[in-house]
Length: 79
Image 1 (cartoon, rainbow, N blue to C red):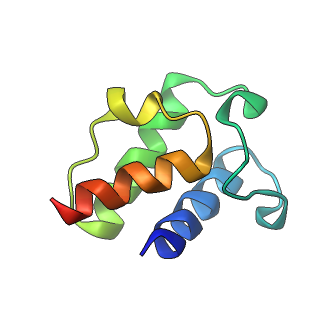
Image 2: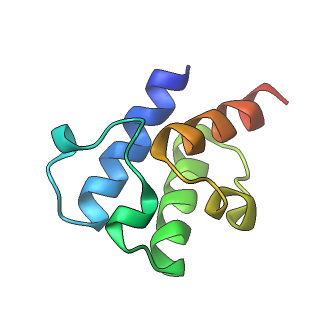
């Protein structure tokens, strides 16, 4: 499940920051992409639509890497 979630996060992040998805992985730091609050919001909204769950934006924003974010979403899916 983590791979699927990570793929969706990478897909959306590559669109938001206009980078090649192949350059992103679980170790990619959000800080390296100079994220704004709206970027996190766009990703969480996308994940909510994809997986039909609520992704609390504030908690998601605490994730440092794309992999951490994927782990967090998987936890929500398992609740």
